[in-house]
Picture 1 (cartoon, one colour):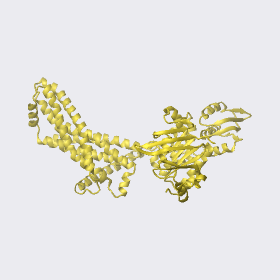
Picture 2 (cartoon, chains in turn yellow, purple):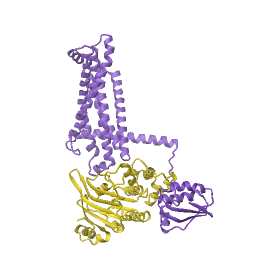
Picture 3 (cartoon, one colour):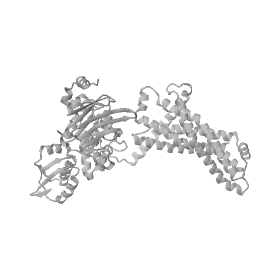
Length: 247
Length: 357
């Protein structure tokens, strides 16, 4: 059996007194695309933000690359973060600098690569997301879909071992969404990436998912492969794969 | 990395962790003739590794070597991450001096036009808003009055008191030499009522309320809240600016009056403790020396200061560009511009009363 690259055990997350994640345990395996599914407000984004320590978990354990990250020292955790790329729901590009500079940030901060190599890597990443000609544009000059693609280019700038995407297809047209899925699959294969994705798009799930984690009301309802998910007898999972909507 | 029979053999992984060393190692072969690059022993290449291969290619100029014995995996990575076929995007940004001057004039004309439209809109909707509250949130004037007036009272009061103390103290030493102690009351009354009270209040309001108006509107603009109001057929000036305009119009005379009285009290402390005046003599002198004109001039100009603060805050807020950085920029600009225009208006007011009255 494969060893999990991310392992979450009994994670509890709270907003004030409200429990958002109630004893969640999940594993993400290397070189797989794991999709987190669930209705609005069920705790999907909270789960990934707790895994990545953007929110501090109330209790429980989160291991990344086999190391417990809750309570880990900042320098040690920064080392782990340099191997993780994150695509935020709204892109989260820095508005005051150009797209080129946005992508150069992780490369300049976490490597000692020469300026020429960095420049080549940025151009390639922008080309991969079809934004080759927008390098000098500022985020405010791009459309929503373009911002998301630019944000993906920044997330993969360092060829991360783990890529986390929060609703990558949201707000994109079907063609762009499909090409983004193809790119994610390609990156997984070429760079041996482990990818964790939050998405609702059934078509996208069918295209890319290796493994499904289904959350409902802060609890895990189902974990398994896509094939197992399609045959699941869990009412909510079965309804989602039958009609493409949450019950 | 080895070079034998014009064949450069690369080994191991080509990744972001290894390419800097590999580039350094390669520099010794830069002047050699390289016909082939043997990739047989390369086990993995990420995008940095492929960028390294591109760099070798480019550095060898026209005598680019052939890549041989590439595994399918490396070949796919090369096809995906090579930048050799991607054209460099050249951005032309230089403009001539005439273009520069023309652009500057055009921008100045547009911004002046926008400012005048905004000024007219604010005055019009503020006047209409007195009689017709449609398009405004219930209780927004009270809420804004609390923020602009009540919340600012403490800092304005404290600074006015300290300013009164300083003014009296600075002049006391001079007045004492001539036995003109009682004139400290004249100085405090005239300066606080006609100048220091209104200007101090306006500067604090520019820093406190002006920045808040600019940043609130700018944030609403960048988060598309202003567009959302427009889509709901709500006039953003009526909804956002008019309550602030009404609130500052109500609060400014009260704040200026409070600032003036507290400043005069600051002067009283020095008059009693340092100049041996009685409190009654001080206040009698203050009342004697002040005319209705002084009070009206002080209060009258404070209205102009207040309106300038709201108009400038709104102008910069509505004209924000970019995101978080843009909000910060317009907030700073609005405070600087507000203080500048408050002082200019004060100077104009002083000149008018110096020559005409």
